[in-house]
Length: 449
Image (cartoon, rainbow, N blue to C red; front, side, top):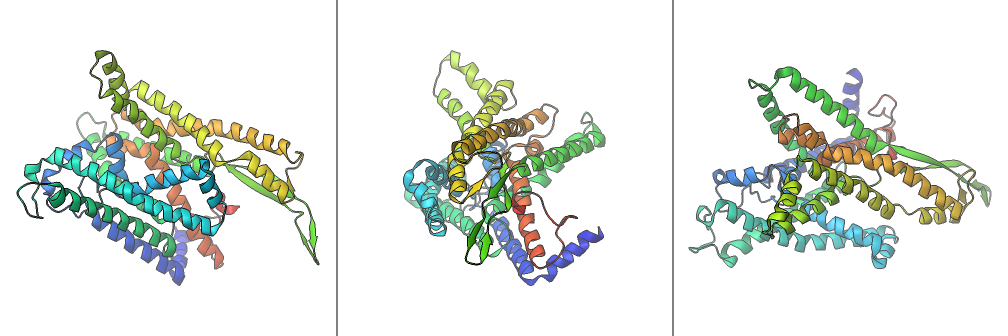
C-alpha cells in the first residue's frame, strides 16, 4: 500500500503527466455529461420500451459501448461506433487493396492520409446509422409522444428527421474529436478510452442488479455473490494472459562497420502475440451471426422458423457453437492477413538479420508460418471460450448485464485499454527515473520490446 501511495505521489509530481491525466479526465467528464443530454423533442420517461430493447443482442452491445447513451436517446447515442466501423473498413482495405497497402508503407504521411480517409468515411456511416436510429425511436416511442420543436403538426423529413440526423452526426464527430484530443494531449488511446469508459459506466448498475437478485429468497445469498466476483477476477487474469502472451523469436543481426562504428552483431527478439487478432474476430463473428437471422426473418415458411429460433437464442447450444467456430476461423483469417511471414522474412534478409539455426529466405518464411500456426490454435480456442463465457455464466442465473463482463468484446477491450494506458503512465515514470507501477518496474507485454 505504501508503494502504491508513493507511485501516486510520483505521478502527481510530474507536471507533464499530471496535466495529461487532468486533461484526459476533463474530456471524459464532458463525454459522460453529453451522454445524458436527450435528443430535442423526446421525453426521457417515454424511453422505457427502447431501454428494454437494448438489453441483449447487437443493440445491447451498442448500448454498452456508448455507456447507455444509445438507450437514453442522447445526442451521443451513436457514440464512437460509426468511427470504429469506418476504421474497420479502411483497415480491411489496407490489407487487400494495393493503393492502400502502398499508402500504409509510406510512414507517417501515409498514416495521416489513412486517418483522414477514416474521418471522411465516418460521416456517411454516421448519417446512415442516424436514419436507422431515428426510425427505431419513432417505432418504439410513437410519433404522438414526440414533440416537434421545429414547428409543424407532423414529423416530416425536413422538420424533424433531417435536423435530428444532423445533430446525431455532429455528436459522433464531436466524440471522435474528443478521442483524438485525448490521444494527442492526454494519456492512452482516446478512442479506446471512450469505449472503455462507456463499458465501465454500466458496471455499477450491473453489479447492483446482480447483488439484488442474489439477495432474494432463492438467489443464493452473499456466498454465491462473492463466488461470482472471485470467478470474474480469475477470468480477468486469464484475459490478461491472453492479451499479453507472446512468443519471442530470437534474431541475430550481422556485424557491419560504418566508418569507425560497429553496427549489429547483437541478438534481438521479435515478439509474436498469441492473440494477434485482438477483439476483431469476436466483432466479425457477431456481425455474421445476425445475417442469417435477418434473412430468415423475411421467410414465412415453417421449416426455417426452427433455424431462426435456434440462431436467435443467445444462450442456446447451436448459437454459441457456431459463434465459437466463427471466432476460431476469423482469428486464423485475421492473423494470416495481419502478419505476413514472407514480408517478415524479406525484411530480415534485407537488414542482415537471421534466426539462429534457420537459413534466410524460404526456410525463415516456413519457420514463421509454422510458429504462427502453433500459437494461433490455442489463442483462437481461448478467444472462442472467452467469447461464449457470458452465455455460459447466464446458465447459472447470472444477471444478463453482469454476465457481459465475464467475457466477450467488453472484457477484452477493458483489459487491453487498461494495460495500454498503464504502460504509457509507466513509460513517463521510468523516463524520469521513477519506479514503475509494478514491483519489477515494468509491465510485461509489447511495451518492453
